[in-house]
View (cartoon, rainbow, N blue to C red):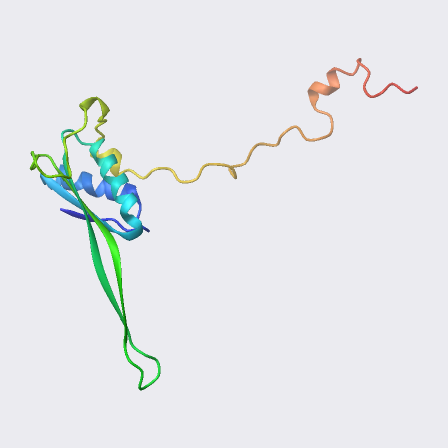
Length: 162
């Protein structure tokens, strides 16, 4: 029911996980959570999922979380150093059933014309990697005479000196 998005993970892996939750496990809702640099990736994931499954209601919560880091000194006799930093966290709940419409982060399902439903097998199938450049580009024309050039010997070539 929860998909944790990291800055390093891929969006397509999250989408296939969502497909597994909705199709195979028959879940009615899922929650996407992320912190820090992964916020944009979480939003992208939610938007793609909304365009893959019909009638998904959404509630988004954005929270600031205080994280306290405590450092031990390398030398004896020094005090511990504590550092508190604030980190943004997002929680996106996508549900097939209607959610609380009075919630300030509520978004109703998008127009069904914008949704393109994909088969579960199609989502799970690996996409081709690479394929650009480096696949061998044939022999090309090169220098030297080809068969076509040998037939067209009658027309003069060069600057015509002599």
